Image 1 (tube, rainbow, N blue to C red):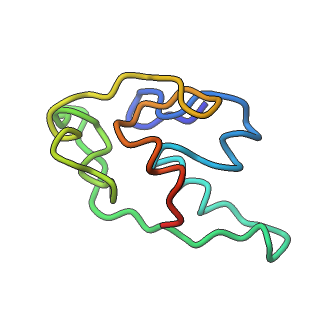
Image 2 (image 1 turned 45 degrees about the vertical axis):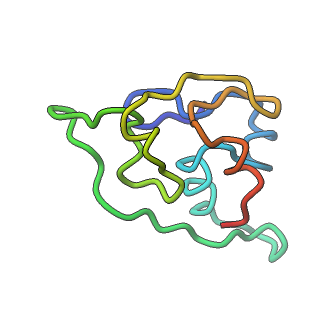
Length: 102
């Protein structure tokens, strides 16, 4: 399970999540893990901005202020945890995130 700001970002088998993260936060987190072998190394994803304040949480998705995939829907509608590609993900754009190399 991967959590962000007190909520579930991605939930599933660790091998599935590690091989192809579907939440933008999980992608960034996995890109920060060290790799022993060259072929296992990932391009580092550097998140912009600051963590939101728990005293004044953002509307919509709590990750939208730091997310490179954020769209208007993310700013106003909290994503539901839904089943995508063998795991549960709380992201409106989970299908696109998993296919991207960004």
